[in-house]
Length: 208
Image (tube, rainbow, N blue to C red; front, top):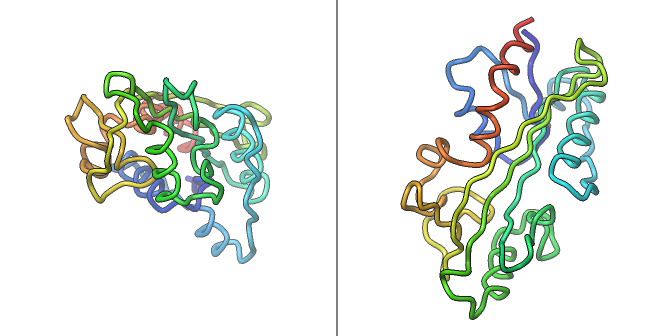
């Protein structure tokens, strides 16, 4: 079975994917791990599409072409209703610097300033794309989508997770994603739902 490269350097996402694929024989490598195995750098892919699936497809294709292995990529983010869906595809870099969680959360709290609780509805959305242009898939892409609904709190709660997890309260589990951590979060998260939809075909494809 060939390894699967998860086109991310985000350790939190890698942990989640390992949890989601627990019990399978699929070997998952992050971009940094794949670069070490190959003995060469793998530059970051510029995420300049205007949709989650567009960014995920671009990352999956480019990483698969650079490594020669099948690549899975996600693009995910937070959509806040009262902000017309922002930050959306800009979630990771909304405050300017990519991956500055504290700055992004602070900007979100400012943006929602006086917005009452009943209007602070939001969702996390994830698009997953599998690409393997050098393998049987050729130019075909395998895609899936996952969504989880929630509410943005007025102050962060919890120390686990990453991104907007401390502010995102999920009614299904009665906690923020940062309070829940990988375990409970892993059962209901947008990424978990996208992976659940993709997993059967992913396992089948990688075991050829």
